[in-house]
Length: 293
Ligand SMILES: [Fe+2]
Image 1 (spheres, rainbow, N blue to C red):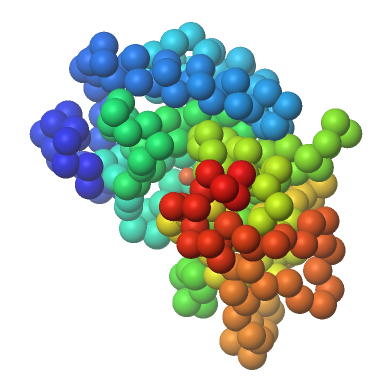
Image 2 (image 1 turned 120 degrees about the horizontal axis):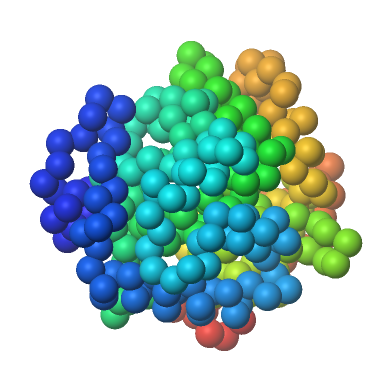
């Protein structure tokens, strides 16, 4: 739980872990951090983010400046796809997270990162959660995918398969790329809300870029503290949705007999767009960032 948000600390969460955003109590400094991040990111994302991301920002008036008020966002979002955004104190247990998604509720943190350290993020903040995730929830197919993911997550608990579901989320919702007629674009929230990874994911020589394959992703470990070593690319949000219609039980039955893959591995059957040099990771990751870019 973020320690430096007194508005979070003073509240007792409900049984489903939600709290009140208490939008009126954001300070002008906090609003200014949002606006700085927003403007910086919009520059970087030109020609890099998926068109649906920009469309979603516009549809929800997230471009007005300052931290969005969820009451106002929800008025629009609920009409568009039936989703709402709710506030939680920080990371919540998987079951509750899945339960919210399965009911078309996206959970967001309340706090915003330190204005002195715009790129340092110990856990997802409201800029990541809202700027990164919420725009695509205006798009019907992606909105359906997120709900299907939540339902699949709840079912995965019966199979002890949280790890596999977490990988699917990671490599799609957080770090996914999409092919468009104008070229490859970012749709993953973890990339879209990060200045450096927006460039790295599309342009660096280092990472692999491989076509989306659900079972392959479920076998693949990921980097949680650095740029990804592999990005998975979809052709459309329908492709994601179709893959999640499938019953995962047979996949869960097969996976224990298959090798786990490291984040940098490529295997036979991969549709590889770019075979990465992995020079960034080999050079030690984050400290070597400038050279790898
Ligand atoms: Fe996220």
